[in-house]
Length: 256
Image 1 (spheres, rainbow, N blue to C red):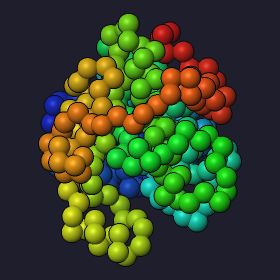
Image 2: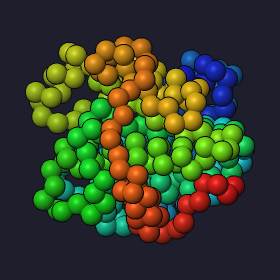
Image 3: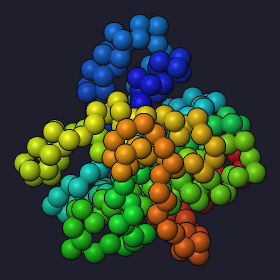
Image 4: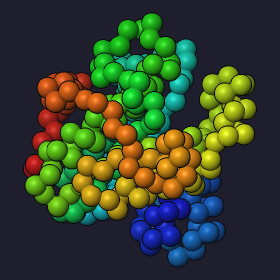
C-alpha cells in the first residue's frame, strides 16, 4: 500500500512498531521513489498510549487512513497491555482507537479504509472472548469486527463527504504464520503482497460503504465487489458502544 500511494504522489506517514525496521522500509521506498515525502512514526496498535502519541504527532489534513495492522493467528493465548485478547486488541480495538484519535485532523473528504479478511464470514462479534478461544477463531472474530467497524462508520457518515470503506487482500503472501504445512501452502499458492494491496487501493477510490476483494473465489485476481458478512443492525449498535467503552472514549464521527 505504501508503494501504491507513493506512485499516486501521496505524501506518506508510516506507522511501525519498530523504528529500526521502519527505517529499512523507508530507505527502500526512497530508492524506488526518490522524490517521495515519507515520515516514519512509532505506532503499536496493541498499546493505547502508543496510539495516543502517534495521533498527537500526526499532522492535520490527512486524506487516507488505512487500518492495516494484522495480528494473524498468533498463539499461544496472549493479551495486550490493556488486558485484551491479542487479535481483538490489535486488529479491532487498536484501529477503533486510532481512527477516533485521528478523526478531528481529517480533511472534509477523507477516506478510512479498513482491511478485513475472507475468514470474517466465520467470525463473531465477541468482545469478551474466553481464554480458551483458539487463535484461528480469535483472528476470524477480529476480522469480522474490522468489517463491522467499517460498515458502521460508513453508515454514521453517509451524509458527509467522508468515506469509510473495507477490503480484503484474499490469499496474499504475508509474514510467516501457522505450521510448516500452512507456510508451504502460502508460498506455493498465495498471490503477492502487491496483488493483495489492489482491492485495498481500489476501495480507497470507491464510494462510501464499499467492500472489495480479489475476483477469483475472493482469493486471487483483480478487485471486485466482495460478499458481505451478515450482520444484525441491533448487534452492530451494541458493538459500537462496547468498542467505545473498551477503548475509553465516545466516537461520534458526525463531529469533526
